Length: 149
Image 1 (cartoon, rainbow, N blue to C red):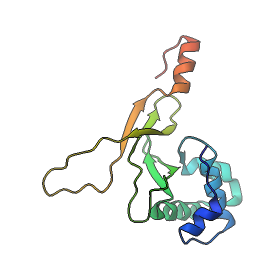
Image 2 (cartoon, rainbow, N blue to C red; image 1 turned 135 degrees about the vertical axis):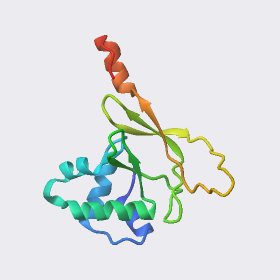
Image 3 (cartoon, rainbow, N blue to C red; image 1 turned 45 degrees about the vertical axis):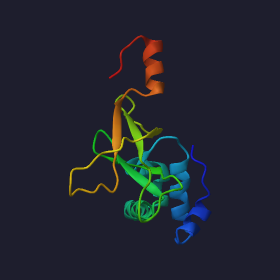
Image 4 (spheres, one colour; image 1 turned 180 degrees about the vertical axis):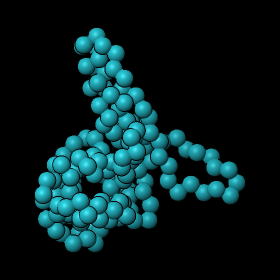
C-alpha cells in the first residue's frame, strides 16, 4: 500500500480536486502492485465512466503522478510514481516484476541498469521488466508441491 494524500498531490500538480480524481488515486494506492485500467473500471463500478478514467490516467501520467507498465499480455498497468517524478521526467528507474502465474506487476526497489546508448541516441527513460514467479506464488508452489508456470 502506497501512502499518499490525494488532495495534496492534486494541488502540488496544479490539478483540480474532483471526487473522481481523488477516487482513482485512492484506489491505485490501496495495493502494493500496479493496477490495469480494466481492473480500475471493475473496482470503481459506475462511479467513473471509461473515457473519464482514461483521461484521468493520462493526466496523471503526464504530470508524473503515475507511471505506466505494460504487462505480459500488453495491458497498461499503473502505479504511483516516486516523489522525484514530474511533468518533465519520470525518475522511476526501477525494475518491474511481472509474475507469470498471478500476472501481478510489482515495482521493485531495485535500480534499473544503466544503458550505454550508441552515438546519436539519447534515452530519456528506460523500462526494465523481469518475468517469473512472485514470492506469494512461489510460496503456494512450495506448499502445494506443484510447479507453477
